Length: 166
Image (cartoon, rainbow, N blue to C red; front, side):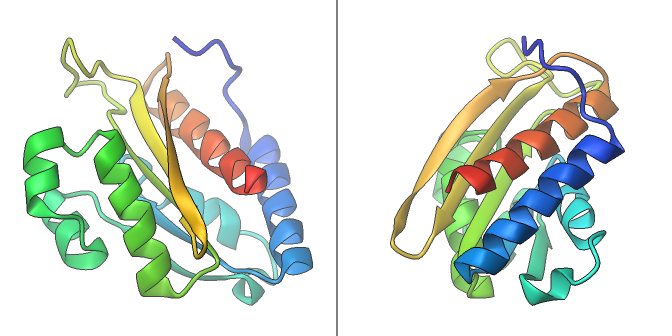
């Protein structure tokens, strides 16, 4: 389980500010494809004044049907791997940047709880992927401890840090 402290609003706002600076200095925009965070990443980013200069689209794709319809995640991949998987978040990230025309995308899919976990994918399991033109999607899995709010806040923090990592 992750031992990281749960980021508060100020910490998330500071990370979002760093993402904004990176976007402005690098001349790229960001899009989000969110499942378990339900738009929380986009909210933190767009809380910043002037975010329309580098953020244009966010996808909240909570259901498998939305992942397929809005992001082009193949039904066969969802059936074989499940929504909380490496293959699905990579497809979400790639679909998001292509459909939004963004320079970078972050995708998140996980189990925030309190129910819904399994032995193979316990509550707190969250997959992340980052993608963009000319950069292959990279994905990573985290296992967070805490309640639903803590898991979602930790996920937002990791998503933003990943955008900063490129």
